[in-house]
Length: 364
Image 1 (cartoon, rainbow, N blue to C red):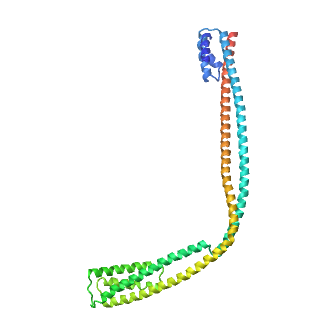
Image 2: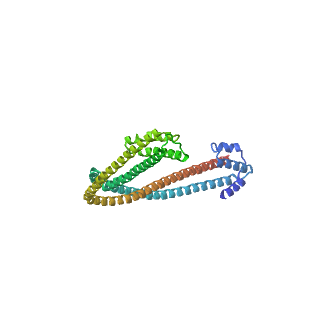
Image 3: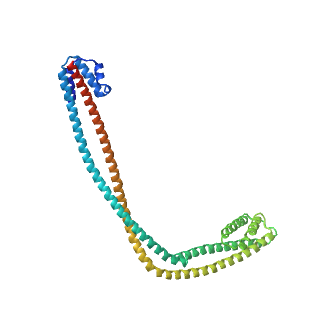
């Protein structure tokens, strides 16, 4: 608003001159917005025949106001700089304290970590004493449970196989009891033979994992004989299959008996091993308990230190960011202040040249 009033006064006071003279006087500033405005205003007002002395006074007034504005900006910049320096000093003190806390926490963490490693080695050595004697009592019990589960499954497989063989034996004996040289099959008999053949195939696949190969060799000729009899029953084939089935029943029963005997021995061994290891384990439990209690104390403190270190790290990072932001703001403020100072000085130079121009006109 004040500048607008000054412009109005200038319009009323300038003497006539040419734009080319003013541009020559303001060489280098002609494209400056303030310089262009001043050229236009001075040229217009000088054409109206205004007083050169009044024009000079107004130009001096503008210069004085520009100088006062520059001084005010200098004061504001100095105040901002002092306040920024205080803020930065506080941030730097906060950063140094956080870094010191972080160093102390990390030193304690390192000391406890070393102690933790020593204790873990001690625990490992005590535990290795148990491992050297095979396994712990819990492991022995696990092996015993696995042995019982495995035995039950295999024993049932043998029982199912023997039952299936006896069912097949009964079916074949019934066929042989009819006494015909070529037995004509009923639909039910044919279905029974097909089902029996499929059962033998499934049993063979189940027993392949844990049955003697000598037993498994009996399955294939039985399956082939049953397949042949699904179309017609030849007495010779029938008798041969019956003989193979009887041998298979004997082999399976022997395999089941051997399985049971092996299981009994294995259970006795595992039970004795479990008892021995449990007794030995008790000798080491006191030592392990002491070490483990200290491990818990150390781990608890390490967990606490992890939290404290995270907090200290966060404080360091945030403070560093705050310092960076404050520094960047200071740089921007300094740049803005520098730009404004250059701009004010340029405006003052423009006014000085106009005053020189007026003085020249007054001396003519």
